Amino acid sequence: MTTNTSTHNEMHVVFGTGAMGAAIMYELIARGKRIRMVNRSGKPGLATGSPTGVEFCAADVFDHASARAAAEGATHIYQAAQPEYEEWAEKFPPLQQSIVQAAMATGAKLIVVENLYMYGDPKGAPITEDLPYRPVAKKGVVRAQMTEALMNAHAKGDIRVVMGRGADFFGPGYMGMGDQGFYPALAGKTASGLFHLDVPHTFTYTVDFGKALVILGEHDEAFGQAWHVPTPEAITQRALLTMMFEAAGTTPKVSNISMLMMRMAGLFVPVARETIEMAYEFDKPFILDSSKFQRTFGMKPTPYTDAIGATLAWFRANPKPKK
Image (cartoon, rainbow, N blue to C red):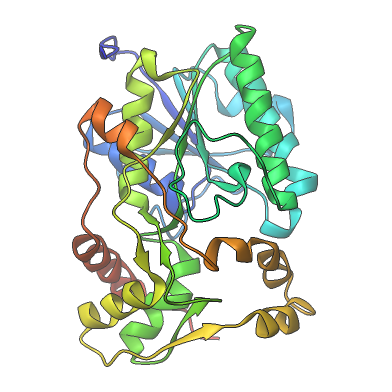
């Protein structure tokens, strides 16, 4: 593949300042790019920190005019924003469509963060990009519909879009795995995994995810496709959590959140309620195959030990707020 080398006038606009948006931002910083980060407040988030030379912009992304203004001058737009987990069905499609409209208006390339929900239950088989979409959860249906809308827009020539897909992720600033594993490991308390702890599962490192998305945006030939970003070999949740304790120098204490516990929590906690339908990912091997990306672009995933060490350092430097 050839690289798009016209870079001197590039403006990279990232919608979303969570862990994924931050990973994209830091990769762009390393490459000396002009960057605008877009969120509701217009202020840096915990995951991004306050890097020198990066513009932060406030926008109501659900409003097409606001999203369009935030994307002014963009050559590359990264869609790393999402609504609350329990609001996906209602809010995710219009949010993404607003960003699509901004890409259409500016003529920018659109690079979209995706997960694996659209594939449904692979029944233990490796998940490759050529699998059909057979979602078994309502959030998977939403994902499939959003992806199909992107591909239709690309096919019609309305936008140039490429999708990068990763598995459940961990990395600096991602509070899901922070609360579940890294903070407990640092404190010597019990870390928690979901459902079955000893089934192989793939985990993507956000730093690798961010780098892969930037690489995709650099290659015109990558567009109009989905790519699984470089991800290490599958590992059990128990092994992953144990590695966190080992890196922290504390004694491993690992427990699982059972289906019964999740159902009880779901009576009061919307995120827990929404997690129940994703249990199929944890009752049999869930293995992402990222060989297409690795073969095409020559990028290898960061080994778990290195990724966990770097992530743990971030959580150590950013202690959990006391309630």
